[in-house]
Image (cartoon, rainbow, N blue to C red):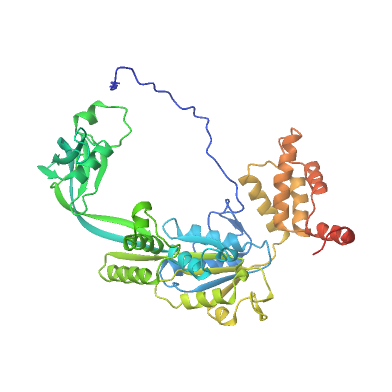
Length: 466
């Protein structure tokens, strides 16, 4: 192998040891891969990390199909059920089924209450982050391998002893054509900044002058000589040097709002720091973005991908926020909204009105409700088994049965917490597998909600009260 290095001293190259493991965070729902449905949309008892809740999963499957077909935009789905029955798991499974290209934003109902921004502004931004815009654009570009490059310099206007790039002459070559072009100082500066030299394949936007370094040409001298290089190697482009190419990029409405807001903010502050003077985006900017997007869609240059906004603990929203969501559902550009709650008949925040789920009745009328139920013993056992596999915990069958008992008497969430604690205790005791002794020890050290309530009642007079 021929290696060439610049400079007098030979470069020091060392191999990175292969035993480095990637950072992993085992979250509450990292084991979920999808809704676990068969080809007919029927829920399999245990599949894709999902266990039980077959009825809710099948209902969610219908929602996913309608989202993919673009028939559910502006609709609201409510996930209602007791705590720890898999509402968030189903929402995460929906996002997995939709794929990576569909925007999915998860937030809590308490996140909209900020001292710096209005709650409606936070909701608007969340809604617009969930709407993807796939833009197709034809642009004229100069593209080819750089076979010759000559940068002309001139004295700096404020320092005659310093030279600055004034213009550049570049010869670009494709398989079918070779052309020499001249460009100004802006393109010359980009070429210097990116370290572009002969042998590189570049792309210059004919309208904006943006320069993109695509890599090193395989047919060039540099591409044949340098076996070790940080740049990727690509074949020499075909066709003419000046050509029209289609560029496809996906942005959200929130991204477009930010770009337009910055371009409109021409104040001294924004020129210096590149930011907007206000924390909120003007309504006129959003209306202008909507009109531009609609025009692009009508011209066939863009496609809308409605995503999902999932608001957990949505009973924490107040009447104003619910009213805003109800109005937003009637807009043309709006994502699918999923609200999750564990409340029964509850008071709507900020009012004395009691309503089902703590939601206004007019919002419930516009939504479809998916209910979840308490897990049976078999489901609890299988979920604990899956969590053990996800966290790479080896557990004895008797210990698993004991944790299942805990899940039935207390809650599934508490049993999952004890599983991790029991695993840590087993490590301290130099055991490779979680045993009944580990489960019993952590059960004696920690209290579930029932034990905590009993303890507080027993010693109530010794605790401070407000």
